[in-house]
Structures are given as C-alpha cells and as structure tokens.
Image (tube, rainbow, N blue to C red; front, side):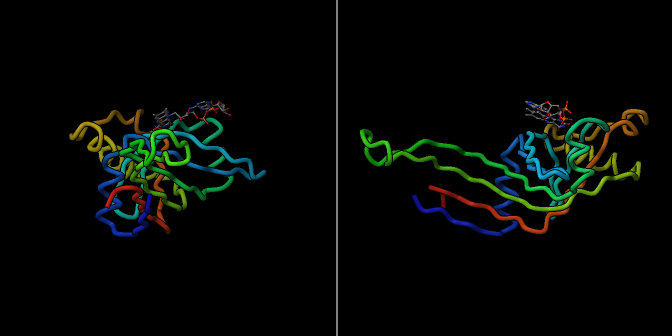
Length: 154
Ligand SMILES: Cc1cc2nc3c(=O)[nH]c(=O)nc-3n(C[C@H](O)[C@H](O)[C@H](O)COP(=O)(O)OP(=O)(O)OC[C@H]3O[C@@H](n4cnc5c(N)ncnc54)[C@H](O)[C@@H]3O)c2cc1C
C-alpha cells in the first residue's frame, strides 16, 4: 500500500484534530528512551502538553528538552488476499513532529494554553483557580520538523 508523506499544514491539522492522544518520545541524560501518552493542545507550529511538576517525565524533559511526538488515526486493517499473512496491512493517517520543549511560566499564557487544550476536548473555555494554574506545568513544544503520512488514504 503506497504511503504519501506531506508537510501540508492543513493535512497535518486535520490528522492532529482527529487524535485524542499523542505519544511523546523523550530521552534523558543517560540516553534512556521514555515514551508516554499525553492529551494535548495544538496550534500551527506548537504542541502543548500539561503535567504535574514532579515525576520521571518532567525530570527527563529537564535533562533533555528534545522530543519526538507521534499522532495516528483512522487505523483500518486491509488485505489483498485473505489467506496470505504478508498481504495484510494497516491503513492510517499519522503525524510525526520533532521539537523542543519550553516550560511556560507566564500565568496568562498558561491559562491561554490550558484553554487551547480544553477547547480541543470540550469546545469551550474555562476559568481556573490560581493554585491550579500555579501547580500545573505547561510545556510548549516548538516544532521544527513536522510531517504527515497517509498510508492507504489519499
Ligand atoms: C490517554 C492518556 C492521556 C494522558 N494524558 C496525560 C497528560 O495530558 N498529562 C500527564 O501528565 N499525563 C498524562 N497521562 C499519563 C502519563 O502518560 C504518565 O503516566 C503520567 O504523566 C506519569 O508520568 P511520570 O513519568 O511523571 O510518572 P512516574 O510516576 O514518575 O513514573 C514512574 C514509572 O512508572 C511507569 N509509568 C509512568 N507512566 C506510565 C504509564 N502511562 N503506563 C505505564 N507505566 C507508566 C514508568 O515505568 C516510570 O518509570 C496520560 C495517559 C494516558 C493513557
């Protein structure tokens, strides 16, 4: 099945909008890979993550802010010949983004980013209590390489 790779921003947005989870690949100072699922917000050029201020992931990101983030959707098994294992495959739409994490400290920007994320999942903005905003870590991933790949879809 042919796969098409594109950096078309509209295609990338369409795929990311269909995903409710992304998988963030990180690596600490010892080169240990660590991949976790996250909810996220998206604006062209930026992926937003929110997390607790402690734990392995934040230590890993402080060690090394480079990340690689995978999104995928529209998974559909297909085959050319039902009796031939090697003729089976998976149709998919996916996006792979590489970038660098910045930790956001500005209160108003944290609220704005939380609402970018909440808009994605609920379609609305929220008000936040200051302790909740102060106690959450907001990461802005500035992407420097982002590509979509469509396999079995055009
Ligand atoms: C669909 C989905 C969405 C999520 N969205 C978010 C989000 O937006 N923000 C957020 O902070 N977290 C989110 N999580 C949870 C996230 O994937 C991590 O489990 C969590 O943040 C803890 O990470 P940590 O490195 O700080 O954990 P720590 O408690 O420091 O990890 C200790 C050890 O626990 C194990 N571990 C950690 N997480 C997992 C896991 N998910 N599965 C199996 N083993 C694990 C690892 O071996 C790790 O070394 C989401 C999880 C899912 C499934």
